[in-house]
Amino acid sequence: MLLAIMGYIVFALMIYLLMSEKAHVIVAFALVPVVGCVLAGIPVASISAYALSGIGKVSTTIVMLIFAVLYFALMNDTGMFEGAVNKLAAKAGDNVVAVAIVTAFIAALGHLDGASASTVLITVPLMMPIYKRLHMRMELLLFITGLSMAFMTFVSWNGSTAKAAVTLGISATTLWHDFVPTQIVTFVVAIIAAGFFGFKEKQRIVRLGLAEGGASADLGIGIDEKGGVAGNPEEGKVLTERQKKLVPVNVILTIIIIAAVIVKLMDSAVLFMLGTCIALIINYPKVKEQQAVIKKYASLALITGIACMAAGVMIGTVSDSGMLQAMVEILIKILPNVISENLQVLMGIISLPLGAATGMTGFYLGIMPFIVALGEQVGIASQNMFIWAAIGEHFGEFLHPALPGVILALGLTEVSYGDHLKFSFLKTWAIAIICLVIAVIMGQAVI
Image 1 (cartoon, helix red, strand yellow):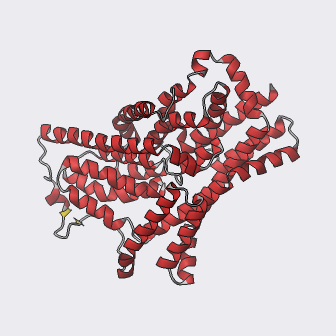
Image 2 (tube, rainbow, N blue to C red):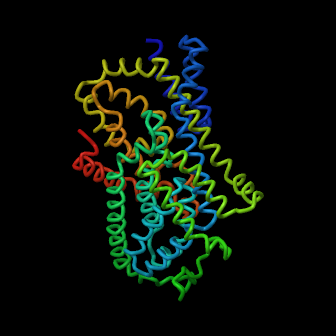
Image 3 (cartoon, rainbow, N blue to C red):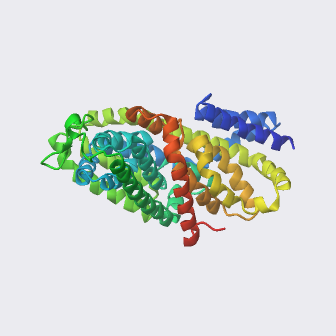
């Protein structure tokens, strides 16, 4: 009983610290469970063994995340995304529906590195002047950006899938590979939703008597004769001639790496490590240049790896100590059978608001370990529980107020968080439920 009570205190405290931002994720996941185990009377030597066991289980995920972050940071630094993004924006022209759909494609492309802030920096500054010129609402820009991010969140090097893999104790690549059909569904639905709400936005513009493109003279922007976005106040980086010539090479290298990850040619950790090495040699031939660019992005990669390592400590201590099992046994005795036996359906319904409230880390490392363990006790497979919960959480990520990308997007567009929620919350929730229903029909999510 003491172990179970201490377990509930540990999880409640971790979630509180994360949601209130009273402590860094490393402190919440490494220190709190260890202290909880000590107070529950578990020998220190055993706690140390549990923690090391947990770190061992996530070691390949840590390596994969570190080198995936480095790789895509390098690709962004070399301007790999610049040409494709600008061409997409140019093709949209003055068509409101096309602009909405292109926004979805650009955001998906921008979220390839798995970082919300870089997605926003690629998408919002480029599209915002176009939205203003066509009298489209900034809330729509944020809404569509969030939808496309949900699609890309399934990839193995994204923090959500990596942290879910830590919780489930399986490879992030395996987890992604198993649910590629669901990922494709979320993308198709996101594109359709972007087109639908783009059409609704066009109707609003017509109803209000605002001519499409009417503000172009004031803003001084448009599509130039070379097919680029002219007069954009948030111009992208200027590429050197050498960087421009290397863009196709970098694109081919990225395609090869992603394809190799999909077919499991090698472990994804090794693939991204090798890919980073090759990218450094191609784009930064001098050792000093390589050292400089690694130093530039090392902190981002290191923070990601350390956070995952702390999560390993948490998973190891609460699982191997029997704390998680004790918590589940008590809850099974309390919960009505109709709820416990259909827990995955309940999670599918509430995962979006729950994920929006707790954030990705709190959801996958604070709530999911307990939910997965509870589900397994009543015969619900862990990966089945994941897909039910993940769809809503993925769509809800861009609604979390503490997400760096959300903070940045609200600052750039001058949209309040309240207006963002009013415009996006119910629409996004409905779209997530639609994707979940399709996943059930496809057999990816099992009732």
